[in-house]
Amino acid sequence: MKPQRVAVIGGGIGGLTAAGVLARTGFDVTLFEATDSLGGKAGTVTVNGLVFDTGPTVMTMPDTVRATFAELGAEDLMPRLERLPLQTHYRYADGREFSCWEDLDRAAESAAALNAADGKGLRAFFADAENVYRAAGQPYLEAPYETMMGFMTRAARNGLGTLFTGLKLSTLDALGKRHFRGPHLRQFVNRFATYAGASPYEANAAFAMIAHIERAFGVHHVIGGLQGLVRGLEAAARRNGVGIELGVKVRHEKRGSGFVVGEREFDAVVVNADPLELQHRSADPLTMSGYVAMFEAPKRLSLPHHTILFAADYEKEFAELAAGRLAEELTVHLCHPAATDATMAPEGKSGLYVMVNVPPFRLGEEAAWQGHARTLEAQLRARLSAMVPELRDVPLSLVAERTPVDLANKGAPRGSIYGYLPHGKFGPFNRPAMRGTDPGVFFAGGGTHPGGGVPLVMLSGRFAAGLTTAHLGGRS
Image (cartoon, rainbow, N blue to C red; front, side, top):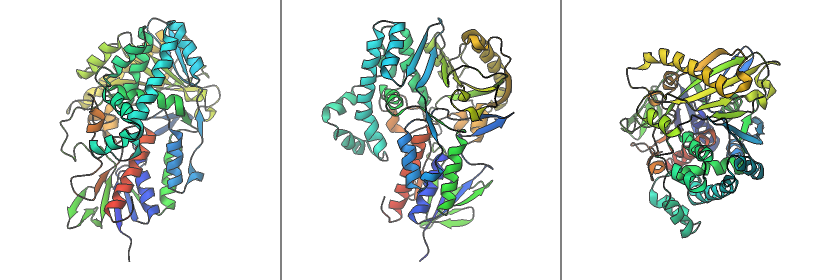
């Protein structure tokens, strides 16, 4: 008897994971990727010997990554992860600074230097973030989210008190104001909404769980760049028997009890692409997009791996982005991977990944990004010079950049990084479903459950594989 056939459309991290798991389960799997490379938004470019990750730069939940490679039977293919003791360094418009160390005592000492009460407030915040993770995060990440009842049942295992704590949460901004007297640490808390492309003034305080995840499980760097992770997943998929076809753009069509993809018949389909359009939700609000500039510095800098340069008025910045405008003053994410990994830059040089949030573009406005990019580059250079003394006399050469149009070419709707915007108390539960409207179609990737970020996208691939297996009569 021939094995059942599954098509995976899209070769991002979610698609590669789903394809490898399904093939290892025993299905005949073909993965179709429209471009000539795998990895989706998790790209890497090399310029003048400098290696830049063009998508995610923060890696956490290493156990999820290891478990994924273990499920693929490919522990030997997983790249090395380096844990960062200094997770992120923050600089504020008034010249103050905060170092968020993984070690809570060191982080609290840095917080207390900003405001004497905020050292204690930081400890209380992280305790709250851990409670949020146990109340909402663990049950949310434990299994595919399909109904609120299923989620509530899982959450209730941690106790009804914990469940009610989760239900009483307001916004992330309100949570920060509860714990901190000064504005600096409130801004630190609010930043975690941007991990989902959201505004802290509209997003549920449940996103504080990201702060707990970073402190409890660590912030990591993939040695050699994120493409090493993609290559490992590709090698695992091929070793498990996945057929990979690059440069082949396909759609799925329901036919009888199965599907036709690329003029071939399949029993089920996993779509590794943003689901909004296919689920008739194109009118849904979208998360923020991003502009990335990659600079070459002609010296090895002393900057830490991750630095955030905060805008003076964070609320104004998010209001401008929500209105569809470029922010007048930008919060800047600066990544200097050579601080951790010497393979990312030749001796005597540094590469800087510099990213700012921007709104998704309106249809028909793609061409305007040629001008927007030059405006943002000039703003970034001015901000770096003003807020990073080490860079004031260092000539930075722009060697590559990524705009929302580039993200759209990777399948992001109007350049939105994460697709669906999870605002409101129940925002995270309204993500596009993992099941398609046709039985036998399932979704994987950052646009569906459980959300964006490399480990969560890996989880979505594993969940999609499990749902597909159950649909085809196997064990999930």
